[in-house]
Image (cartoon, rainbow, N blue to C red; front, top):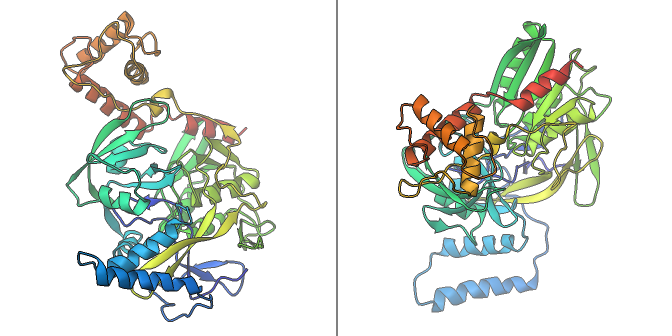
Length: 489
């Protein structure tokens, strides 16, 4: 398989970066003539504007032209020519029923190119269409979406009271994104709960900072932990620099954390894998529509001389999965929960006016030829987080607080959250018992609230805030702890 140099190859998580354009995770790549580093960064300019297609057009295409003329000549209202053309393109693409194939207008492409290089404004979450629902793939680290408690696989039902039913991802993103300092209200349906809830999020500037590292010392071992939040333009450089710094400190082992990482630039995933996967096995395969697969290998002579593990969860997708499955097939442990499952490659073809069509054209496969699309990467060591990591915001009003002797799903959720904060609720089955009432009173006293034993808006909001802060602070991170425990076994 040879990739045309004049085309722009994108591997996308099938996600749309809210507040940016509707398409993040793209990579502009071309074939390397030497073969051993298959995909390189190229210019973001439309290099193939003049390239002619060799596809024979069907005669029925005249219907499109006739329809355009009929609308312009007979429709009762004025219609913009560009809107008609873009509508025709979007209509054709929608018949493919592929959430990863879409039309990106010039504004979307401009915002995308700006976003991978610096920063953007929005809520900092990436979404895709899953089973007909606009679905959160991952909130970005330190973003308004993360601070508001959004989680992977949350379904967005409405935006500011307007239903997203029937809208494609681009249309949904257009409603969610907006300027820094403005609010957006999302109606969320979370797996495991019967009732949706609303979250108000203030949009902000989201910096593209993607690599974080630290050293954990335990049982005489110094373990480097590198977290990659997404794969953007400078992630490879940041990773290499921080890995070198950790190695200079004499680490005994390494944990690569791609939890909640929705993917990004394919060549960055390659840069990272080329530092770990030796040349005697491929780190990636790319398969074309005819089933022909090409293997790509590094120039590395041997593996690292220290143990390594990879952390994944349901929010790890695409480029994250490329890294995780390659390391897994290199016999390193992968710890956490089964990843998202996105194994296709998109090609973005410029149309000559700064717009592009992003279309699924290829598959990526693991080093051993496994296609994880729809199934994800299964961990070698399965480890869930504590239950409060999966809780939902407390939805109460001062007129209808949660009180003693009530039974509901909302009470069960509140009990899980309070238990996660260290308060003994006696049970988490949804019955508001005397023990639960006492736990609520203790929480209120500890936080200078009136000790009523009832969960009203103020108490519920404070419980929720403290749980979110505890999760973001990494307290009780069972997955990381398990990874550190198993690393030296």
